[in-house]
Image (cartoon, rainbow, N blue to C red; front, side, top):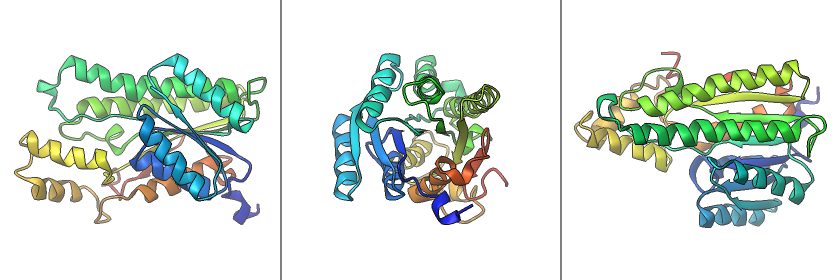
Length: 271
């Protein structure tokens, strides 16, 4: 193996959902830096356009799409648009997701369903239509890699995050089923999940504030101290920590990796 080339993504086409800001934007920039042409999608049109501008300013080829991941027709249009723009699709990063902290006894069924719809149904639809496009005879037909963003909360219990944890646990097992099916059926598609700990994006900040609002921690400093204690490595994550793992799973360096769950969490699950 040529290890220097194995991690490169030259000639590959990637689609990153939820790429208007935060982790999704960092992942899109990382894939572009490794040579991929990148389509970004988000329900936030202005944010998606801003990410496209950043990518193009760096010299990358990029396209943006307005995309509600719970809508199947929009998934079909976004994948078709990506293939039309770049001639195929090799990488899908199912990053779009929502989070809302609530103790189980106080969580509304409406909020629970909303989180499952975005995080689980959105990921399911992405896998479904990417597999169709990437498999032999599909619109792209050259195989590929799907990376599903789960969470450490999909593997362990996290206070006030029952709905979120349930959704990310579903993403974890959905990933394994997709990986087994794609492998057995010879589609040439690998499917893996990533499980970050706390990343200080806007969503991570929201998590900390929510813990205080729910009375689980006395103040913001207390919330940070409590959650930091869950990370044996001694710090919260950065978007680049997760983006680097996406590069690996998307690349030919991981050509024999499918159905795996990669924890990028500073040791949270290990502890």
